[in-house]
Length: 180
Length: 340
Image (cartoon, rainbow over all chains, first blue to last red):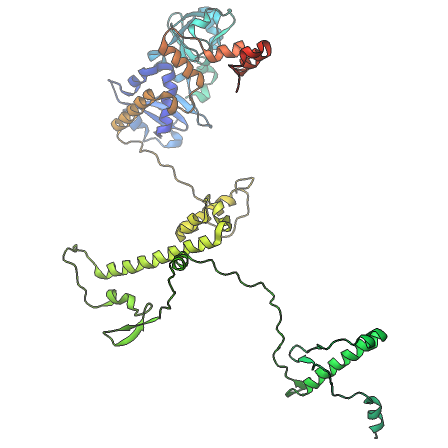
């Protein structure tokens, strides 16, 4: 367990900023408690300082997880967000997509969001923007990246992909052993 | 036994004396005889072999005469004549050495007409009333640093060491001379001296020679190490020599885990503001479409993705397809837009 280096922080922050934009400040500068990012076995954890100090007394091979896992660094050095970060992403998301009840299950099985399943979308969403996917009753289901901007979606046929799937809560079951 | 008849038969007509118009040149050291006399044309054309044989015989006779006049040394194998050193000049085996290219000082002296004066190794010492070495042990150049008392300037600092001062001055003169010598050598070597320096990425030999010995050593060592691991397995499965040191890279160093979290937070915020100011350059992996999208966002109503529009319009051929298509269709009309 160690703090992120500057390059690593840069990667993590740019990836998070893709979803929550300037709200990222609220993750770092919290009024309630001091939180920090920690790297442990290629995974980035968002931990309260108090928990981090407790976890420091656990031997490295024995420490399975701490705080909230935000994602992991791939072997090629890219940062990949995990579904476990959804709580914070949903809280601060800048652009949101709501999908209809009939589209929920296909999305939770790992499929992209097609236009037919699209319930609502934030106005002025640009292309290739990170968005958080909600069900119609505002339950966060996952996140992805828009394939088209909001304006472009108007003209598309119902089977066209609107949001590329990146992570969904179905992964809690599918990737249980590698997720945290 | 009467051998007078035999002697008379063998020595008839021919004596051991060799008489020639021009005396033969005998080089006993080389065991060679040179006959500078002209060839008799009649005798030569009459019987070539016989004439050459007689000339050769005279030459050998002269050589044998010369050999027998040499001082003799008695050995177990019999008497041995002691050959003198050779007299005939032989051509040299190697070409003459090239003249040394002049040093910078020599060039300057030539241009100014400065004559070289030999500097004597000994100089006169007034105090000792004796000749002392100019340099070396107890040399004149070490006079100041070896004297038992030294005048210290009035404005000298507290830790002023006159001996060290003088010694440093002298050492710096030596270093300067060494540097100039290296530069002269490098200039003399010319562009052929780059063989060693190319491997280290140095453009000219001057730069290579200007390096200190330690720097050169380090560079060559690094080159050797790099060459060593430049194999298919990156040196992993190569034969190791006994006692070969293990290669060590740079050790990564990270911030302490339980350091000051507040300072960590402020560093993160600083990084964040830096990213906001300059989002594209700060993220190497930032995708180009994001840039387009950001531009569209900023301008408000312009959400058309130009890159994508071009791709659709040309069926994926790109913007250059516009120009070529226009040229093919309209001739001169499209030329203004086309590649130049």
